[in-house]
Length: 297
Image (cartoon, rainbow, N blue to C red; front, side, top):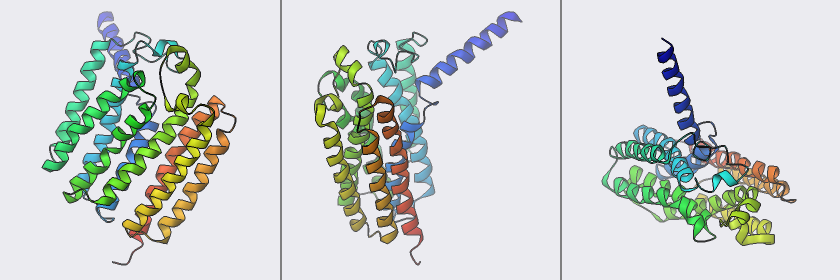
């Protein structure tokens, strides 16, 4: 009886470590991946998305974000113990072995691919590129100062996949939305990288926060303006009306608030600015949904 209880506790601890490795306790990354995916689905479907596509992509976002966290911690397992924010992660603390992480990543990717197989051929082919982007991103910070751009491509690849699933094509508005989200990802991941800048410099990792240096706030502001302009152009191409444009006013306000938060480059406030992007993504989504919903049938 005692052995069975010990085995149950050991299994529970292992599952909790896997859950932490997948960041199930920190869903912000899932939301940041989910919002642009939903933007794309709604725009591609002109406000009337397929329920099947919606279910597949929402589940896919959850699974692939989890897989991305696993492979990220696997790639950083030698660096995370030296960073204050990450030293207690399961791989860094030795509670999960590297081999387990690889198996978990493989299983999650396999599960996501099973979902994609219910979609059309173009979506399936695009998903193969998505897996490569997700698997390679964590290693980029060793080679160049733009790993945030690589992450942007990985997080944005759901956009062409959504258009392919809904329409079987990749129209110009699809690639505009892809570019907007790539740039937005660089914005919020730069804010995230500003939190770890000192640790990254000490251990020799690269990021846009290090690349931009003292110009970080200015470059982020310029990129935010480009994102806002891109969202406005996307609204014109998708024939979105005043409700969507009103939402963009709120988006501009959130961007300004983020600039206020990072003005002193305080680590906690930079992280708060990063988290605030969840609200930004949600506001854009609500603007799209309500604008389509309010149209006369």
